[in-house]
Every structure is written in structure tokens, then in C-alpha cells.
Image (tube, rainbow, N blue to C red; front, side, top):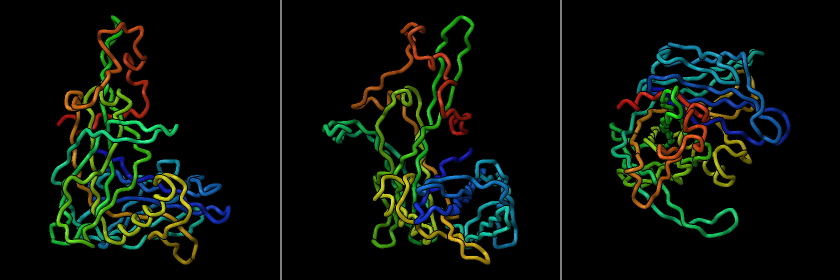
Amino acid sequence: MTLTTCVDPIPFEAEDEVPKLVIFGTFTQLSQDHEVSVRLTGKFGSLGTWVQGATVQLMDDEGNNAQYIDAGEGTYILPEGALCGEVGKAYQLIVTLPDQRRYESTWEIMPEPVEIENTYFEINKRQRVSSVDILIENVFIDIFIDTPLRTPGGNKAFLRWEIEETYILSDLICGPLDNATVCYFKVNNEFEQLRLFTGIDNSQEKLEKYLVHSRLPTPHIEFSERHYFNVFQYSLPEATYEYWDKIKVVTNQSGSIFDKVPAGVPGNINEVDGDTEVFGYFEVANINIGRFFTTPLRLIQGLTIIKACNLHIPFEVQPEYCCFCWLLPDRIPKPDYWGE
């Protein structure tokens, strides 16, 4: 399985036009490729040019190290198995730019996992104001979890969630020479809001029916067959949680974590032998995954799914992707869990 739900680098609005270095990466215990992004800010705080030719390394507290591969466009990949994430071990990211300036993260300890007890959905109706200020009622798919707020060792947990959605689309056979094709797609959750929680300031021992994701069931093509929701629960060190909590405060004022934000939030990466300001964070997290799927029959309560492709309609008037699903964007290889 390949996890691709990392939070994208967040652009910071600089006070001047001097480009700022932005380094973002997440390392987990999962057996998968891990990514680090090395970019420079552009005009007005947008993400500008990527940095190629950097040397990116991961070090653990026993002296083991592994090097990331330059995949282009500012993305560096640590191949699966190059260095394994283990609870209680500390890890450090080291980035050396082509001009030999060196940047290091603080040492980050891999926390204990916090396992999700249950993941499920409800169909709920809510009113919202449309873009033309008209009050309308919509049907939402709400995703909930039940999860403890303590680690197996009894410590209070610091949690962050990300959602990944995938769906399947099966070709219709639209001609005598056609072969049916099955395509898999990932939903672009670009504007997903940042969701965090910790039990450190209250007496709660667990979360019950906690909302981690909500969306309109459109376009219908995504729900015309099986549709998976994957809930990634990140167990974080306290300092990492505090970083995301500050980011959440800032982004709540500006829209989403992918909008330009008005000020930089200090991260955990610094220049060695220098004081160049660096944005971003190297996150070490332990991930637990909750997963379930929906089908049109499961969504039938209060929700009408109009199948985009229909065997009973002449193929000449079907959308082109009904005959050739590979024409749609965001196509991915078949995920491992689709065989479960």
C-alpha cells in the first residue's frame, strides 16, 4: 500500500520579496515511500520554484542513515524499507542545498500508536448558504470515528486526521470490439480542513462519534460503484501537535491549509552555521488507519445516486468516460485494500 495523504507544503506570505525556504516532510512507521518537499516561496507568499539537486538524508539515534532520491519538482523520496520507523526511536532530517548550506530538524521521537476503534458514516441533511446567498438544504455524508485518547502506555494522545477517498469506475462495453476496463481513482481533497484533538486538557478517555470528515455526495460518478473512505489517524509528539494547532488558528482566519496565510509559524528546521529563516516542519508520526466503503445501496437512505453510466441508455449518448474510464483525471493503480 502507498500512502499519499501527506499534507502539502503550506505557502507563507513573506514581508518582502526575498524567497524563503520551505521544507515539509512526514516520516511514519508504515512500510511505504516517504516524501520531503523542498521549495522556495514565490511572489506574495505563493509556493514558487522547487529546489533540485539537494541532498536529503534521514538519520536515526543509533547512527543509521538513508538518503532520499530526487524525484524532480522539489520532491524527494525515501524508498520503502530504507529506514524503518520504530516507536521510541528519534529521527532527524538533514537537507543540504546545492550551495552547501545545511539545514537540520530537531530530533523527533516516534510516538506510540493510537488505534481507531470504529469508523462509520451517516447521511445527514443540513442547511447552507449558496454562492448567491440562497438558503438551501443539502445531504451530506458525515464520517465519524470512535477512538481512545490515551496511548497503550497510558499517556494522553495528540491526534491529527487526514482523509483519503478512492472509487472505482467500470467501463461499459460500447462497441463489438471493446473490452471492459476497470479504473481506480483518488478524490482530490485539496480543501480539507485541518482536524486535531488532544485529551491533555480534559478528563476524556475517548472520543465517540467524532466528526472527522463531511462532504456532499457529488459528483455522482464517485459514488456510482464502490467508494472507499480511509481515515488516517496521526499520533503525534506534543511539540508537533502544537505546531499544527498554531497552523490551524492561522488558517481558520484565511480559509484552508492550502491558502496563503498571513504569517509564518516557526517550525523545527534550522540552518546549521547560519540564521536563515526556514518555514515548514519535519513530522514524525505513528499512523493508524480506519477504512470502510460505501455502495449505492448503502447510501440509499435519504440520498439518490444517479448513475452516470447506464446500460439501458444507447452508448452514443453516454459520456465518453463511460466507455473509456481512463480518460478521467486522478487515476491511480489498484490499491491493495480493494482486494479485501
